[in-house]
Length: 76
Ligand SMILES: [Zn+2]
Image (tube, rainbow, N blue to C red; front, side, top):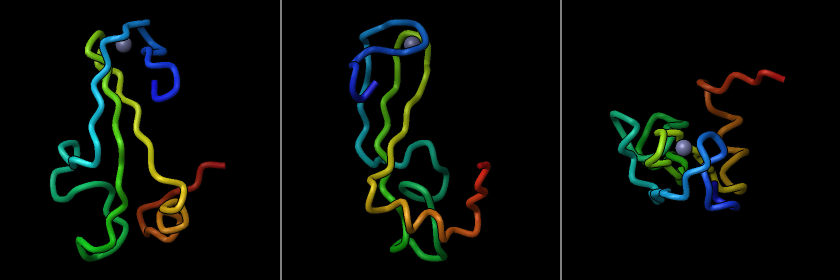
């Protein structure tokens, strides 16, 4: 949705963008990768108002920090 400005599931163009707001995480903004609030990674979200599909993006410079998270589970 970030590139196409259109929902890949239902085709709607009624898309909302949220900068790192944290509303989908109960305890903190972004994804907690450490023990303190200072080690969170920013997450940008795109939400389709047509069907509720949500797309989330992490900045490339934050990906190595995510790899070090104890919660990370590589599936490849
Ligand atoms: Zn949709």
